[in-house]
Length: 306
Ligand SMILES: Nc1ncnc2c1ncn2[C@@H]1O[C@H](COP(=O)(O)OP(=O)(O)OP(=O)(O)O)[C@@H](O)[C@H]1O
Ligand SMILES: [Mg+2]
Image (cartoon, rainbow, N blue to C red; front, side, top):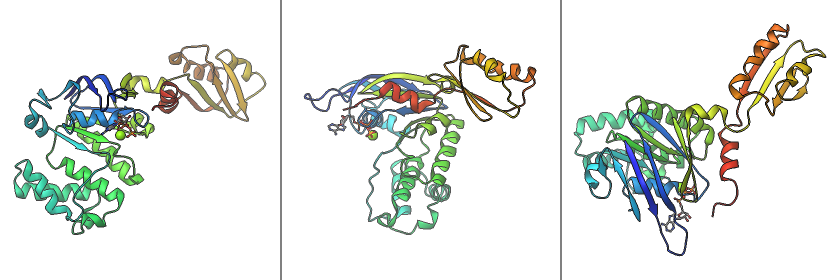
């Protein structure tokens, strides 16, 4: 479990704080998404939590250990996949991974098995004998994920890890994060790919200019912003628009109807499906959706961030 208590970071007195009294937690078995424009403070928060930099004030606690005051105990339970992973590029993958495992005092045979399994999962096993210099950008990212997981950490931070991965890599990451969640680990993931956060996060924190301005629960995600109803009816007639207008503004395109400015609450819009069926209409598609995280996010944080 990760607890951030009133974390602030002032890099320069001339600039406003990069992080401003940010408090949040990532519980065991939870995936928490972190969304914010460029420069909002995501990497700063993650670097503080992982002990790379110290906060100006506030504290981060990993499974009960303060990352500054009990650094070793806290670090043993934590790993970060940095936004811009940096490794000694003259090294080959396996010796470097063995070295990282050695830092955690892990057994050699178990380590070698783990290295093979992780490198296969992330599809870089075939490149195991190459120097990291010869890895592509995406392969380096995959290597960074393997390196972070080698110690089987209970708390994992992924800073923009999806960025730069191909669709297969994104899918492997998604499966990995859901698997980590199933194992009861705490997963914190910053991403600009808001649809991905929408797909897997239990909660999404929205940060603007160093402050957490919103925490969205998974249950709130489908109904964000103004909802609309999308319907396709295979036997529309002249009366259908009148019926639909009781629910909101209706736009018709052939067999498709979109209702906006709903006059009924989001949860009740589904009742319209029954009304249509009772009136003899054949409904082949019916969906009620909010604007989605991206639209909502932009309405919340829109404008310049720096
Ligand atoms: N080492 C540093 N020295 C001075 N200022 C810094 C440093 N690192 C970050 N900043 C500033 O702190 C603010 C937050 O930066 P941060 O990297 O945390 O943002 P971010 O949300 O991760 O952005 P991005 O989406 O671009 O990765 C920015 O204004 C940035 O210029
Ligand atoms: Mg960043």
